[in-house]
Amino acid sequence: MHILITGGAGFLGSHLCERLISQGHDVRCVDNFITGRPENIAHLLGHERFSFVKYNVCDYLHVDGPLDAILHFASPASPQDYLELPIATLKVGALGTHKALGLAKAKGARFLLASTSEVYGDPLVNPQPESYWGNVNPLSPRGVYDEAKRFAEAMTMAYHRYHGLDTRIVRIFNTFGPRMRPKDGRVVSNFIVQALQGKALTVFGNGLQTRSFCYVDDLIRGIIGLLMIDSDKTVAQRTDRSGFLSSPAEPVSETIHDPVNIGNPRELTVMDIAQLVLKLTGSSSPIQNNPLPVDDPKVRRPDIRRARTLLGWEPTVSLEDGLEKTIDYFRNVARAE
Image 1: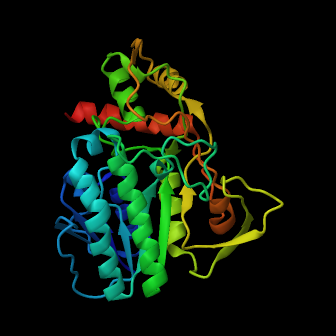
Image 2: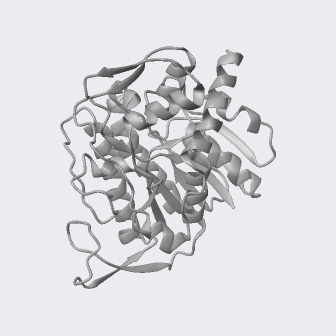
């Protein structure tokens, strides 16, 4: 396949480039390096099945030759990034998604949107199924990311329904692994870097808010599975409006074009994660509690029944094994610097 990945030099985008090339596909990577990094794709430069263009996907988007699939991963994706880059975050969710969808339509290519668990906001149900509509404050500082992705989902479904475009939407839950940026403001990378540097681990609030972390290899496997599955795949679920599966309700036929959660359903408190990082790094760093950011979600846990049914997917890498690999990566980064 000939595949274009926007945001291909980012944390997830670069892993997708690497995995798809290893499977024999031709990959074109587009990134403007606002949050992506050249070193993430440096080892791929010169490969006969890889090409790179530095470009902002919010501008006119054109590619010569055939395209079979577009994976739209361009976006700031950590709280620190989208709080510092609110306009860019909204623009890439709106204009960037529109340009990428237009290119997919012109090429007759399959389109996969990287959405996020943030579309659920500060959820009132736990775990969060795809049928849950969310609890989002569009006026909060975090709202720029939440609403950018919610708009991107709406635009993607509009292209599917109006133009018949073959689309996919993956809702990505918290993911970690090698190639995370040391100072990206995410929980796992923050804790690991702070522990390795002997600094206090900064826990926001009382640390009892929950998160569910998926190792990057598992996530990439799920995304590629969603990209490659036949477009007529369906699953029947019984749901009510609250988002819970409900046996009295009529079965709802969901297709592969509807959103799919990809993440690890193992739920821990942020304080649990901090303690685990201290244990695995052997660090004696203290834990420091800071004020809780505005609209910080109290819970975050994916309902992955759709992924299991549609894709036969579920995570296989344990949190502990994934953290060990990620800690080793950050140790090597520190030595290299």
